[in-house]
Length: 146
Ligand code: SF4
Ligand code: SF4
Image (tube, rainbow, N blue to C red; front, side, top):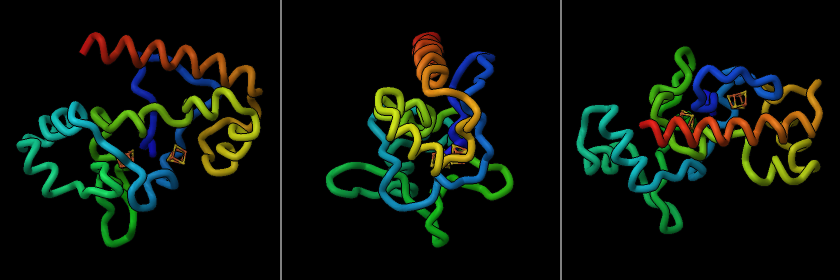
């Protein structure tokens, strides 16, 4: 994911800087999309929500998820350009790494650091939590402002 760079308005993160490695865009079934996200991404791609669902999604365990390509990367991951739907990517991508579990549990944050080279290993858990809170406020404001 970022590829998963948060949707913020000029807010510089100290605890996270996506390296665009695509590690979090690999694997099947993890990228859920809700109705609002389907409409938003379809609009961005200039296709109908139905065409987006049939062309780019699949249902997995009762949830709609973005498909992977033959290489098992998300179908929207491009090795050179990273996320091809970056401005409208689903919340599960744009909120990483500031997920509630990473913000509330230090061990989970430690594990997230192992998985994601974008999480600054020099920053403290306290700093990560503080920035996570600010990022959440900022992305909520972005969404409210459309
Ligand atoms: S939509 Fe796909 S390519 Fe974009 S950040 Fe999410 S998983 Fe990665
Ligand atoms: S694993 Fe981390 S650094 Fe790599 S693309 Fe995903 S968010 Fe960015």
